[in-house]
Length: 308
Image 1 (tube, helix red, strand yellow):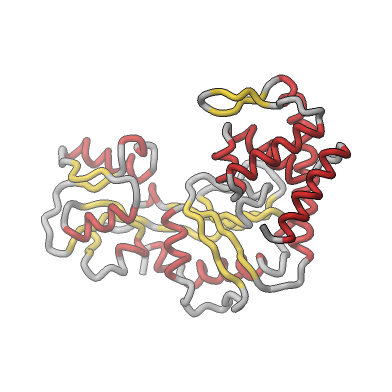
Image 2: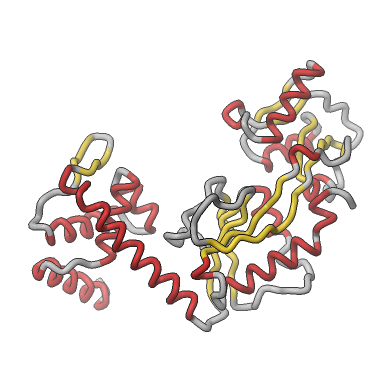
């Protein structure tokens, strides 16, 4: 064990004996309460299950050793003593996270990782355009980390530094700016009959492209050739000639094996918004990424809309 690790363990032991709480232990307590198990809390925080168990035990020790969770076969559930601590723990969390965000924003370093939460379509667009020439470029010291997530990661808890989403948030202390619009149309392999449809699974039937395709199926009686849960699967199936399907225009128009069958479909065009917590908006690392995204969407507007 490294000397630094031994020192931290010793410090935690001393804090537990003195009754002093560690913010990291409070953070673990809240993660276990939200996730329902030590393993899931570990995944959420990037910690091992034994570390989660030690930190939870350390927090319980500061309250006299009383358990704060019921140990059940399906996981951990807050007991009455634990439930009483949640509001105070969340207040501590809010204060600590505010300090962490403002510390990050105050750093003058234009280096490090900027984590961006985005859906599959938007994340793919950013990934393919990292080397595109625009009026703004990312500083050499910044590494973009794209997280494909249909659910916006919690920007308040810094699960991501920023998000690129279909809709702006209803509330919260966020900076929000419209980035642009993704047009979509129907594509098939060049020269293929491709009468059947490639579409999303039934569980994804609420997606706008899925609803539109279902209307075409109902009106024409054409069959479903494939149901698949991701755009990449759709692209590969359409490219192979399995069927026709809806793709973002920036994907379909640029593919040499695909042909577009109609103009962009207005009702499934997708607006995208840049969302950043206001504490981080002017961070030396985050601000260049915001500027780069805005410049990229402006430069690629006709490609994204499918009107070129």
